[in-house]
Image (tube, rainbow, N blue to C red; front, side, top):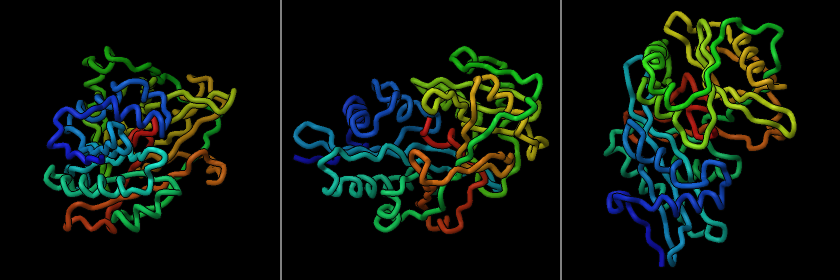
Length: 316
């Protein structure tokens, strides 16, 4: 028997069942217990996720969610969402579960004040969500490989993030500087509460890098035996720092991680990152940026993002 259960009728969703499904179909180190989904769906300071799941004979076979985000443009804050964890169990893909769950979520989103949703889709699913689910394809998400710079910015503070750092007054003072740059299009808002929440993601290992003009968030990864630094976010320290050069800060980050190279994905109108863009055919999982409007006053063909980087999605 199949049951599509609206979130309103399931105040305490079975996160363990959804975690088990995600671990089976989208293997990731974060899906080892339900801590990740509890953080993602229930602890977001902007409010709970809108989620739908489908069970058949006691087995979770499909799951999908959007989580609240806040963007801003020249007119102020805009309530938005990010689409993630769209998964259907192997052997159940042609039953229409994703479409049913998705359209139910999109119907609820306007009642939560959400104006639009942003997502990333792989090559296989992009065509279907555009054709059948009403999304617009913005385009491929740029990826750049970063080589160690000859010079590294001196005096950069490299801080492994933990609960004590995030709760500190020092971090609160720093966060006050990071949501002050101008916005021509739409940029993801990282006020203190949102930044503390996002950087407390379970089963992750983030580092904060505080330079004179820019604050960056990174993590350490590897390509085979070669260590890599993944640049997750770049934030100007105040409006005057917009347009500051990034190469020496990136150099300091790569040295800190003792990395042979760095990886940066996305774009940032305020801070340009220079690197080599590899062919999409050699990228492990090329991603497309997609958007969908929930509000007739927000023409999705005119939605333009100033920034979109790894920290704005769920890749790390």
